[in-house]
Amino acid sequence: MSVLAELKRQMLLDGLDEAELQSVAQVVEPINFSRGDSVFRENEPTLGVYLIRSGEVEISRKLPIDLKTKMLITVRNTQNCCEIRKTPYGWRQVFAKLLDGQFFGELSVIEGKKKHGADAEVIEDAELYLIRSDKFAEIEASAPSTMLKILRVVARVSSKNMRYLDKQLLRLLIGI
Image (cartoon, rainbow, N blue to C red; front, top):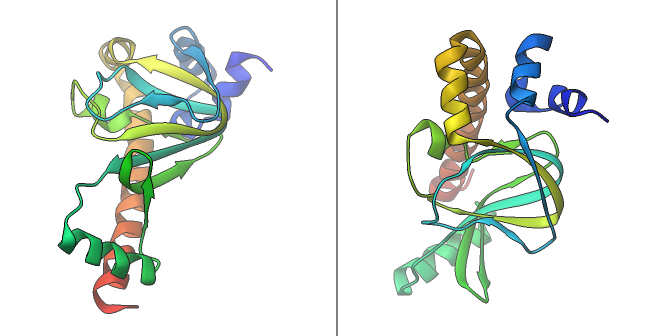
């Protein structure tokens, strides 16, 4: 399948016309990862926005643990609020498990952060496309209408994620 056909399947690029997709196709870099590989770790430099062509990627963050936090973990796990687990690298909170067509790393790029605030680890062998931060900025400068379409998708996904987190918080606080 051609890169252009693959990009048509990407959620982040939903609503882009053929010419806009063609311009994005010129800047994406294909990258392959094996199961267990790290795409990036917390505090590593931000490279850009990642689009998942195939595979599965987990976004998580290391948790500092004290007695109070252990108690909260017990409550959260009892309520099925969110996934928190002990790993060889310490306690981790899983924010998302992402599949084909989904994207990640966009918040660091949009916010202009130089370092990632979480880890991205490959759960199933993954083929990704990377849009480097500087290329993302070039799209913004040269094609603002294209960037508006992309940012609308980011806003929709962020809104959906906020509603989900709100439900999880209510479940944790009052058990609904």
